[in-house]
Length: 322
Image (cartoon, rainbow, N blue to C red; front, side):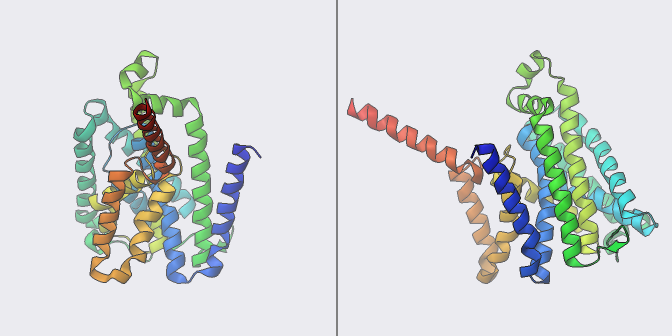
């Protein structure tokens, strides 16, 4: 069996395993699994911006907040979830274009600070514009949608909706990365000057990397609001943006499955470390630090890191033998 067929078979098995998981999980476990899928969608967008295009962004939680508040406000106004969600994605896409403009003039940590400021500005807006967002009291009783008259109010039913959206979002991103756009993003990351000399429109692809990444965060926000039934500014602060960046880096920046593994580590590992009580965050933080020291390319770089170490060791032994 070829590698591509093995790859497809592994994907099918993984999706089927997720499909049967609700039968073996209690309410909180199912909630965490659904939240993990939401975070995967958000992290996929950030991975496109940071991992594939090589740009720094600390505003991803803010984009997710835009998506969540757009859906919550629209549904409170009587607009269907199925109309509000595309609206949220379009708004996030446009804001992504807006925040992409600083990337045309500043790079590296300067761009990170610019996007961080944008995230802070969004949180202040969510907190202070009570007439629209409810301020610190937030928006409550966000109902889950219906699909062809079938209520998705149940935890399992909503999980399957989020799973379907995650699979579709992943397939769309895979198609994008295999297209000439994906190669242009990689060229932009590796060497912008050389990419421009080969005809890549740096301005367009820089803006589009932010816009598409923000649109994915908007999808995640649209799914997040009905999941938790209540939103306030706190989940969309800079801390959550740093958490998304951690997911991308820990899983493997610029690797397609990096967000899947990174989201699981960042979300689920602290839950399993709670037996350590007051020490669980310290253990989690130390684990991340050690991993970044020995696996700076993320967990998915383990195989290539071991191969590189083996080749260096073999080269030293060969040199010593001579």
